[in-house]
Length: 362
Ligand SMILES: [Zn+2]
Image (cartoon, rainbow, N blue to C red; front, side):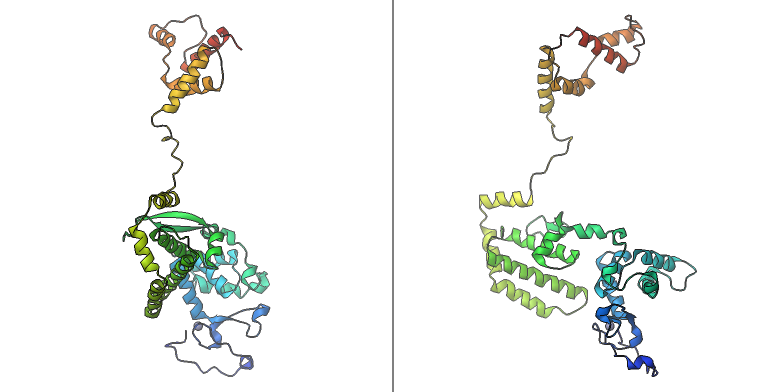
């Protein structure tokens, strides 16, 4: 941005014969404040159409959005300005800014350090646009942003506590289909607001309502962004208010809240609180399963049939088994004519072999 910076009188050079670029973000035209773009699509100016200051601003916004993940912020910045993301160049830049002897230091300089290395892009074979990126799969946190989107869903209707939410993982592709080409953070916000409306209205079945709710969510998202960027939001807020009023959503919401039938409540529960598979250990707290196994296994054993029930029975009831003979042997130090037989496990095995040899096999 040129604001607050005196415009320099650039000496007349060969550069001046070239067409002059103006930043599409802030309108500045200091030709030295632009990064080079070598691809054919931008050959007229041969420059990235955002000035360096605006790119720094874009980077800072992504940094905030992705919780100070410098790698991810750099990646999304390069996506926006259409320059290649080269992972090895990133790690190189990272080494440079963390090296105590380096001229430019500190993670905040990672963007300029990366851009410096881009001067060697051609000789390194790094390509010239974002499509030429290499090594995105090594970016921490990127894959999780791309396959699924974590959407927050408020739990308590009408609750003002923003901590009351579930996190639902939703397919990113599906959300893009529904909302269009937004990044994951926007998608998560839009879907979360939509679900909130869905709950307030006890489901959205009407096409018109669906369209209006989407418009409201999109408007809210814009307001959110403007707020983040310090842009006044009064106009957009007024538009949002009108949208909600004119679409009848406000009335609809009040009506729905007043009368929720049993069917809707059941649907509500199914949709928002589906029964989950219980934990393995909580599967059978009353031990009904064990009783069944005890009965089936015990009966099978009694009628001389070895099958999967007796197998499970042996396994499950093993810890409750008291071997009287074994105990006696230990107590009196007696040897019933067996070899070894000191270890429990071993004597157990021996018992079984004996039993099995007695039993009549079918
Ligand atoms: Zn600019």
